[in-house]
Amino acid sequence: MLSRQLSRRRFIGQGSIGILALTIGTRTARSQQAPPAVADLITRQITPFNAEPPLPKLIENWITPVNSFFVRSHGTVPSLDAKELTLTVDGLVERSLTFRLAELLERFPAATTTATITCAGNRRAEFAAIKKVGGVQWDAGAIGNAEWQGVRLVDVLKLAGIKSGARHVWFEGQDEVTEKDNKFPFGGSIPLEKALDESLTGASLLATRMNGKPLTPDHGFPLRTIVPGFIGARSVKWLNRITVADRPSPNHFVADVYKVVPEENAELIAKTTPIYEFMLNSAICVPAAGATVAGHSLNVKGFALTNGTKGRKVQQIDVSADGGMTWKAAKVTSPVRDFCWVLWTADVPVTATTSSLLVRATDSSGEVQPEKCPWNYKGYQFNGWHKINVKQS
Ligand SMILES: Nc1nc2c(c(=O)[nH]1)N[C@H]1C(S)=C(S)[C@@H](COP(=O)(O)O)O[C@H]1N2
Ligand SMILES: [Mo]
Image (cartoon, rainbow, N blue to C red):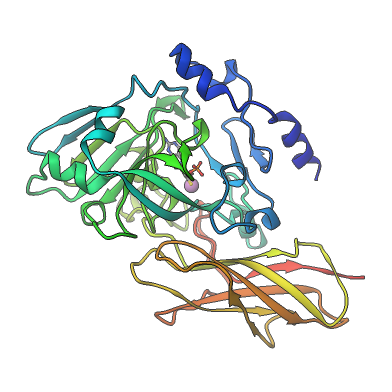
C-alpha cells in the first residue's frame, strides 16, 4: 500500500511533457523533466520506470486505459520530436527506404487493431515459491489490451521489396539501455512470416496512437511496433529502424535474454530460440489477494489469454475455492477477439474453510494451464494456476 501511495504522489501531474518537448523540439532525458503521470500504477522500479496497475483496476475495462496500462522500459525514455523522427527500412530489401513520420502516415493506408500486450516477465514474482528470480518482480498486471492505430508493417515491407533469403525482421528503438558498461538501444525481432501477416487481427502495426490518442512517451511516442500474439518485448517502442535479415536480431534482447533456459549458460542460450508467442494464462483480479470472504458465494473476476497461436480461443475458465477439488466454470464478460485477452466472472461457492482461490484456463486446442510452471532462470512466461489467499471474516 505504501509503495502505491508513494508512486501516486511522485507521479502526479505531468501530462504536458510530450507537448513541451514537441513545441521546443528538444531531446531531453526524463531526469531533467517532471516524472510521468501514471496515477493508477504501482511502481516496481523507478529508474528505468516499470509499473503495473493493481489487479482490481486492471480488469475494469476490456480496453485498458493508458493510465492503467503497465509500463516496461529497460532504459531511458527518450523525449522525441515527432517532426524529426525518421524511420529507416534496410537490410535484405530491394530498396532501402527512409520516411518522416508524416510521410509514413500519408503513404500507407491507416490501420487499426486491438491487441493485448503482455510482458514475458508477467507473474515473475510467483517463481519465488520455487526459487526467486532476478528482474522486475511483476505481479499479474504486466498486461493490457489496447486499440492501436498506425500503418501495417506488411505494407511497408512490400514497398521495400523483400529479397530472397530474408527470414526475420528486426526492430530498433531510440532508447539507451545500459548493460555491463555497454550502452545500446533496445531491439526486437520477429520471423518474416509473422511480419507479412495481412489478416485483420494478426497484422503487425507501426503504431502512432493508443486508444485514439498519440502514444505517450512511456509507451513509445511517436512510433512503436505492435505484434499481436507475441510477448511485449517484440513490440519495440521509440522505433526508428526496421532491418530485414536472414537471422534473428543480434540485439541483446533477442540474442541473450527473453529465452527460456534453466541456467546462465552461454552456449545453451546461444542455441535457444527466442521467445515469440505469449502463453496460455489467466489470473484472478477480484477479490484482491488477502481479501476477507464471508457468506456462501463469492464473485470472482479476472482475465484469461490464449497463447499467441492464430485462431486459439479461450475454451473454458475454471475457478476453485477448495484448493482444486471442485471447479466452477466462469462466464466470459468481454468481447472475444484473436490475440486479445478475455475478461470473466464466476460466482463461486465458499465455505468457512475457504482459504484460497484458484483459476486455470483451457484453450480451444484442449491445452490446459499447468498446475505448476517449471522454473526458468530469467523468470519468463509464468503460467501456473493463479492462486490468491483469502481470509475468513
Ligand atoms: N525501445 C524499447 N521498446 C520496448 C521496451 C524497451 O525497454 N525499449 N520494452 C519492451 C517490453 S519488455 C515490453 S513488455 C513492452 C511494454 O510496453 P509498454 O511499456 O507500452 O507497456 O515494450 C517493449 N518495447
Ligand atoms: Mo517485457
